Length: 252
Ligand SMILES: O=C(O)c1cc(C(=O)O)c2c(n1)C(=O)C(=O)c1cc(C(=O)O)[nH]c1-2
Image 1 (cartoon, rainbow, N blue to C red):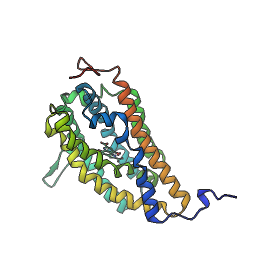
Image 2: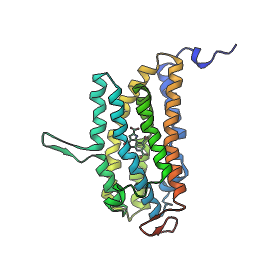
Image 3: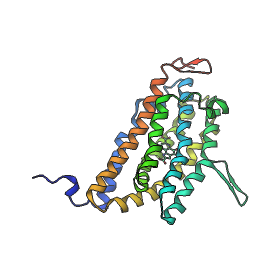
Image 4: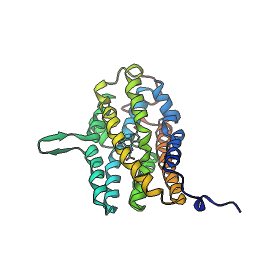
């Protein structure tokens, strides 16, 4: 009788890491909407629609990280994890001030021609985008904190997509104020640091059995699906939405 993966010995740490990294083929960088974005084929209204909808993901991230921390009894992990909340919410500690990633995303909104209120009011966020993002937050609220940590590992692939935007937008979308790209620049270092921690934890915790390793791979797939569904939601909605009187689909 063929043994199921649960009975098999654990993969080596290197093999397990390679299987996790191999999931990059389902990353949203391959979604048609992100391919169009990188090739400069989005209209102004479509790019605005993406920034406005993605804001809902931005504000969900620290809430998701707070859910992880609220379940985690390990002080050392909480000490590292809290940095993620500070990165997004910003802070002012001992005279050092950082407005944070949410503020940087609002500035990205302004750089693509939205107002602060267009972004923060959430008026352009479409229902399916909310559903996709809420699924991620609910996962972190309902599942064990170790699983929620593994679900953050899509960030393994994020520096590549941030770099792609830094490299392509100035040529493809010259009307975007280049100062707005600061969010992506900040994430290059923040995401690499997050991933070093999240990956180390996942390799340690889930390597206790093959079944746990398979579970980690399933969790990563779930999160890849969240991001894919978010891109689907934004792309489809742009057949219908109007941003500031501009029909999505009409070239700027
Ligand atoms: O722009 C992107 O494509 C993208 C993807 C992801 C990701 O892969 O989850 C994140 C981010 N950006 C990001 O900026 C970010 O702060 C972030 C946090 C997390 C997470 O799961 O905790 N993912 C991501």
